[in-house]
Image (tube, rainbow over all chains, first blue to last red; front, side):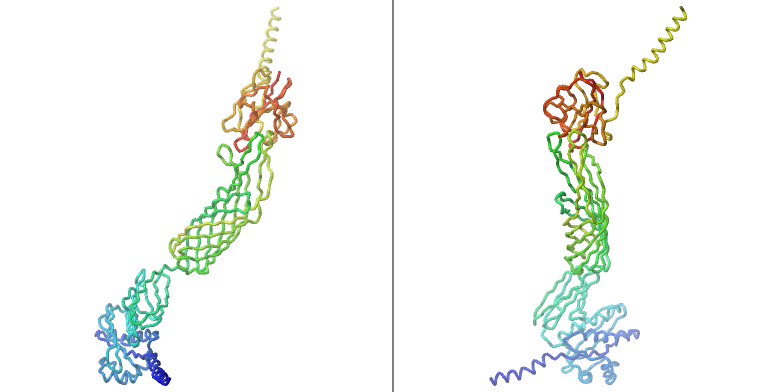
Length: 419
Length: 157
């Protein structure tokens, strides 16, 4: 029992000690380019590095204003040379465990930045990097390189990350700090959980939680899906199977051309529906001893506006939607004649409306596919004229009945998403 | 004498001028189909008021699937696609009856028209002599009335 208590008492400070993050002070960089016009980088580069490192949870970063005060006291920024005594003194003044120093050379088109992390106590260089970049991105790349050194600087157990993406050249942020662009090979990270974030212009951002164990060489490969623009126009063509509620009608085929615009979670579109053969044929007993079939069909043409809502419009592969639509419909009744011509019997002008639901497959790609079901109804029933035999006394007689064109339909479409 | 001959000759010329044209227009017959808007069925014989000596003859286009031959005791009157004076519709025949032959109709194979069924009775009729009107009309495969002939007057022996 006593032994256990002693073990716990001894272990506790060790655990607390291990959990305490090391403190890093980023000193001013040295201008070795010989160009006074680049002097501003002496402070701009460490400011950028400091800002990047401050996002790293495995270390603490000393405020730059405090460091400037220290530097002026020991006049480090003038000499740019550090010996063991100065390092120890600067570290104590800045209350830092690690000093981060740098030197840059070259010209604005191609700058070379050398970064070093030095242990204050031992004076040993813990890690170093060399960055080559133009003036335009030297700050970002130096910050990323500095951040990559923190896995060692933090003193925690290390793992290694190899990160690739398709397409490559995606920016990679680890725990909120930019560490470079894909592909990244054998990047040192402290063992534990991390947040990995990949982003590339024109593609959907991707975020993952990863866990790296000590010594592990983890490979991460991400496929980036194209991002949907804030606005995008589309053209499409579809097919629906018309399933009428009335048993006087048979099922029919509807061709649907469509154009529209998507904005955020909403889509507005105009579409046309063409149903060229909605069969309502029937037979009656004739005066000639045989049953005669009357070949009859409705031609249904609709012009409608549709509004859809996509609650998960940032989905990459499947995006469900619901929507409503309404518009004008013309229904014409045709009777087939023996000489293969059609005789128009009547026409109806109606208002149609309804609701639909479905999914869009691959919504962020140039070509996407729609699968949907819809219910469609009309503001009134139409009058259906049904013929009957008048014997041998002449032409056919007819009676009128009321007919509902309300219907369900299921179908699909292909959509070309124009950027 | 000479003047008498002249007068006689003149009277003959006048008589000829007035009588000959009259012979050419003594039997005017309708030329339009009995149902307006239908295509024509051509009647072949008899075309003018005459006593029937053989069969009624007519020509039906191939697209006509069902044919009706009708005999009336008065001029046929139609309203749209229906015969109005059904009471005058006495005899006829049609596709589907055993003795019906499209294009030719014998007096002996006519049937009585039955107004209650708007169809012909099965047994053949005995048609008394008299003046009648006849016409033919036809239907397509869907039962639509598409063809008809003009009506003709005929004397049956």
